[in-house]
Amino acid sequence: MKTFKVIPKITEYSTAKEFCADFNLGPKDLVFLSKSTEKYFQGMLNGAHVIYRGSYGKGEPTDLMVEAIYKDIKDIDYDRVIAVGGGTIIDVAKLLALKTFSPVVELYDKTIPAKKSKELIIVPTTCGTGSEVTNISILELTQRYTKMGLADDALYADYAVLIPELLSDLPYQFFATSSLDALIHAMESYLSPKATTFSEEFSFKAINLILGGYMKMALYGKDHRFELMHDFLIASTFAGIAFGNAGCGYVHAMSYSFGATYHIPHGESNYTLFMAIFKKYQNLNPTGKITKLNKLLSSIIECNETEVYSYMDKILNVILPLKKMKDYGAAEKDIEVFTQNTVEKQTRLTANGYLPLDFNTVKNIYQEVF
Image (cartoon, rainbow, N blue to C red):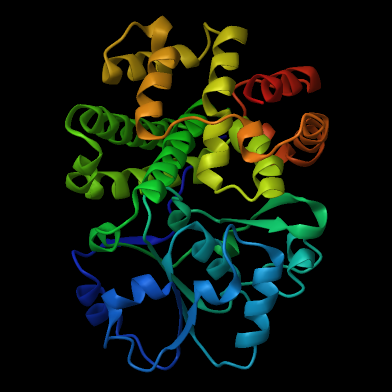
């Protein structure tokens, strides 16, 4: 039996002002955002408790970040958590809505149960995470030198709020890495053995919007993205619904150790491995479900189905030039460690792969992108 569900209520607003009027922010709210985003909410927080992303370091979310926030908010009385931001803010905010989230490592080890005690409202400010509609939170566990995902229905938002205005000044690098991440979500979830008829439709729609947008940018220039921000934001949520039901596979599994070790933004570490893994899928099983995916891709990028991944390489490099692992400082000795971590510690993700990859195949992919 396969099931499909969308838990959060999804609402759209043109502006932050409309959102604040409807949700009536006040003293019983905990708002987690960045100072650069606060300008959209000026004069509308009405005494809400505000914590800033920048107060807790840079980069991807970590266990240390969560523990520092816990110390600052443990005595605050709040009923709602309102997360306005990208993947780091959203992943952490999901934990802030739980009854107990410290020590956070014990939560991820599941020795502390995940029990929701606050209402959670998520407002994304990038076009990639899709986390506003998923029950997953990803943290770097610093003592273990890897990222881990906690998947539990207690992490679902009550409301996912889409406001294109908040993406109007999104820096190009963040746009590129986040939208690439959404594309990977959509393609991985489509090939997942857990995919359903419904999740596949959301995957297809997200792929159409993102790749179609990239084709327009290749034609009209990178600034054309501002004409397409609503499409990219919706595509990210579509992809989130798809992978929230069907899961992501080897791209995410293999990027976690690499990204955590060298503190690489999530979408960028995924991108490093993306095409190498899909080309490997194509070589190992070219007649399976991937044929349907290739047909869709070829119709968007206007090429032969047998050439989709070489053509995608060219298009994606226009959006973001691809780097090798060594360009980020990786050492050759990392390959063995990353392979071991993927095979032994990322089974939640590898179970969603298009087909199972053995130790030597995983190692070979790392070698290809090194």
